Amino acid sequence: MTMRAFVVHAPGGPEALRLETRPVPSVGHGQVRIRVRAFGINRAEIMTRKGLSPAVAFPRILGIEAVGTVDACPSGRLDRDDIVATAMGGMGRTFDGSYAEYLVVPEEQVQTVHTALPWSTLAALPEMVQTAYGALFRGLRILPGATILIRGGTSSVGLMAGTLARRHGCTVISTTRNKTRSDFLKQYGARHVVIDEGNVADDVRSLIPDGVDNVLDLVGTPTMADNFDALKPSGLLCLAGILSGQWALRDFSPMFDIPTDKRLTAYVGDAQDFMRTPLQEIVNLIERGLLDIPIGETVPFENTPDAHRAIEANTTPGKWVVWL
Image: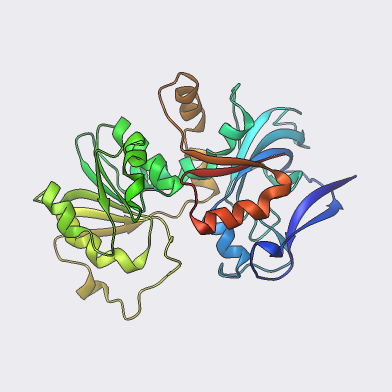
């Protein structure tokens, strides 16, 4: 039996995603084979395609998340045709990922979901919800009434984080480089929007003179010093994204670069974190109309390279989803 898959043989642009026919992967004990129905596209996959993800060997089928139905589960823990979601755990990096009609993953990184949501809606959730929820509630441990600055607010994770933080009773300040997206951000949790031209601390303090309780930074290391300036004493900064593409700060010295009265942490989700993410709870809220999901565009499988191009061009905010 064969399947279609997008394979990257060497780093490059969107054209490096080559649609090929491959054998359907075999499934062993402790694994689940999923018939992929849809998947979200992530900037992490774009970085991998460009050769910027450490320890990724090519050729590789990309994709760090997927939703679909169980095709085979030798242990019997999951039934055929169960609706499932999976994310992280080496998908698309150390083993082939979700840009394919079939995917094999370890059982311990598969959640079953009871839902009638469209595949395109469900597919927007796994990685986006995991990162937003994990950064807010494990990294920052936000409390109702807290103020939070979301740096990189128009990213899909930023939009999801704003939505969840507002629902938790927080005051959200989101940043964007695009002035036309202010109203869009306010649909997804932001009470205030700050235009990011490199430094935002002064604008944030014009809104919250004492500084914010928390900063969720999805841009990366270049904004660290400015984020500290926006924090109140005892405030907490969580690094949870690398939209800038800059992984490290040159000559970074924790003793001198972290202010004495402020704190720094990070959130890097893994498969275990995905399994702790209350995905079913989020799905239930969506089905009841109590939570908005920032979906950008949905495209057919054949247009996956075009979706990469659009995300890199930053044409449409929100989560891009591919359906099969």
